[in-house]
Image (cartoon, rainbow, N blue to C red; front, side, top):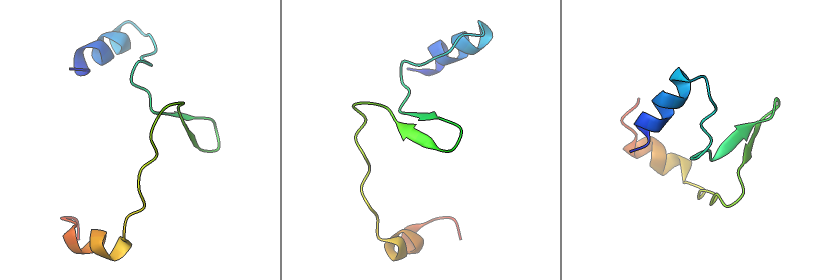
Length: 53
């Protein structure tokens, strides 16, 4: 479980970077090395199955 180490790092005012997949560099996010890119999804299909309307 990742919650405990994450909370501990917050309480200790330390960076938790063990599970970082992206970093924000001021003008956008950059994927970390070794992180697999997602797949393109069909927008209409996503809208049809979305629980958020």
